[in-house]
Length: 143
Image (cartoon, rainbow, N blue to C red):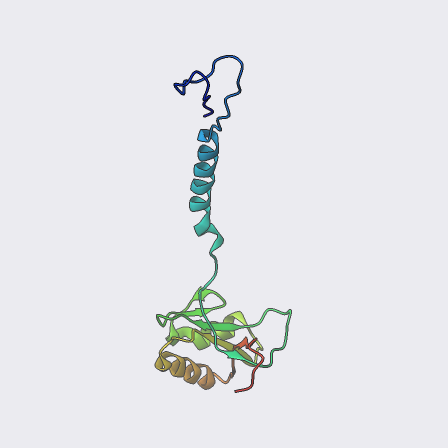
C-alpha cells in the first residue's frame, strides 16, 4: 500500500496518486490447487515392484521377454510380477515359459539370504540355469 507524506499526518492520498497493491489471493489459490493435484496424483506415478538390486560393472541389454523371478524385501515371490508360491514355482515356470533353460533371479539387496537360497535350489532342481540380476555400478572407481 502506498502512503503519502503530504499534509504532515501521513494520511493516504486520494485521487492523484497510485496505490501499488499486489493481490496474492489468486496466487495462493492456484498454488493450493496445484498442491492438491500433486498430492492426489503422486501415488499413481509409483508402479511395479520396489526391488533394489546389487550393483556391478558389466551389463548387457536385451529386448526380449525374459523369465524373471523376483524376491521382495519381505520375502514375497513373483514370476514376472505375478505372485507365485515357492512350491509351485517350477511347475508354473515350465507352464508359462516352455522350452526356457534359464531364469533370471532378481532380489532386493536387503532380502535375507535364506529365501534366495531356497528359490535358487527350487529352480536348480527344476533343471533351470539361474542367473542373478544386478544393477550397473556408476561410481567409476575400482574396488
